[in-house]
Length: 432
Ligand SMILES: [Zn+2]
Image 1 (tube, rainbow, N blue to C red):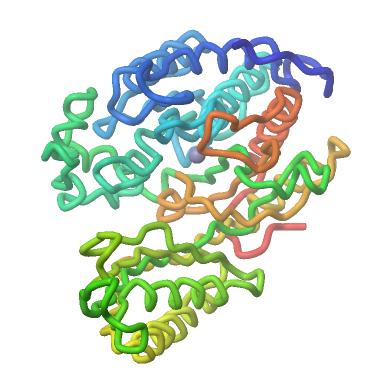
Image 2: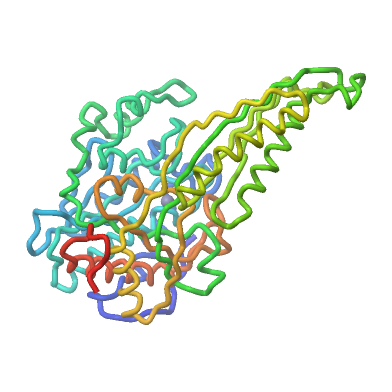
C-alpha cells in the first residue's frame, strides 16, 4: 500500500525534504517483508533484513555518500564535511522490526537521515563536520535475547559473551551475524573512538500517544528510560483442587497475583511504568492447586532514584504476598540498565530549530530503548520524536502521517545544521 502524500511545510530542496521520495522509499522498504509473518515483519538476519540493508546501501551510494558495511552489519554512509576528518555528526536508526511490526519504527530515522544528507548536498553548503548516516543492525529484541546489536558494536560494548548467545535452535549470534554479511571475528573493529563523535541525533516515531494528544508535531527527548528486570519465583504446594479446603491451601499463583497487583500499584505516581509480562504456572492443570508460579516483570523510568526505590518495595511485596499464603517467594533482579540522559546541546538544537520554523515542541521522555542508548557511551546523543497515530507501535497498525514525517526530517536537517555550529556538544549547558 503506497504512503499517501501530504500538504504541509514548503521550502527549497536545500531546506525541505522531498515528500514524494520519502513516500516512495517507505513504500519500497515496506515491501521487503517476511511473507509468512504478520504485519510488516523484517526481523534481523532474515532475508528481507539483508535485502533492506543492501537496498539502503545502494540508496546511500546513489545519494553520493561513501558507503561502508562494518563487521557488525551496520551500513554507514558518509557525507564529507567542509573541514571533515575529525569528529562526525551522526544520525540514523534501524531497519529491522519486531515480529508483526510496522513500517515506521526505525525506518523513518534511517530514511530521514539519508534525506537530510541529500538536502545538504542540494544546497551546496556542506556541514563543517562529516555527516554519517547509519542503518544500525538488529536494534529490536531478537531470538538471541539481545537488542541494539549493531549500535553496541559501534559503542564497543558488544562482547564475546553476547556473540555466544544462542537462539532457540542453538545457533549463536556470531553465526547469525556471519551468515548476514557481518564478521564476528572482526567485530571489535566496528567500534568507534569517542573522539569520532561530535553528536548523535536520531529521528524516531514516538510509539506513544502524547504528541498526538497534545497536537504538537515534535517531541524533544530529555532522557531514555532505564530498565530493571526481575523474576519472582513463588513456590507453594500442589493439591487436589476439589478436596483441599480453601483455608489450608498454599496457592503459588494466588500469591503471584497479589504481587502483580502490588507491582501495578507501585507505578501509579506517573514517574515510571511496571509490567508483569509473563507468568509460568506449574503443574498448570485446571484441577490442581498451583505449586509454583514464576513471574517475569520489569520497571522502566527516566528517574534512576525511582527505579532504585522499586527494589526494596517490590522485594517486600513479594515476601508479604508469600507469607500470607505459606508460599516461598524469591525475587531476583536480572538486569539493571540506567536511564540515558540526552545531551542538553542536542535538546537545545532541536528546540532552536523548531522555534525557527514556528513549530511547537513537547518534552517526551522515551519509554522505549533506542540505538541512541549504546551511542551515549561514546558521547552526546539526542532524539526527536514525531507523532504516532493513537500511540500504536510494534503492531501492523503503527502509523505516522507523511506530513509529520516530512516535518520531522526538516527538523532533523535543521538540528544537524545547528549542532554543526556548536563547538563542543559535551558541554553541560549549551551556549546561549
Ligand atoms: Zn525503533
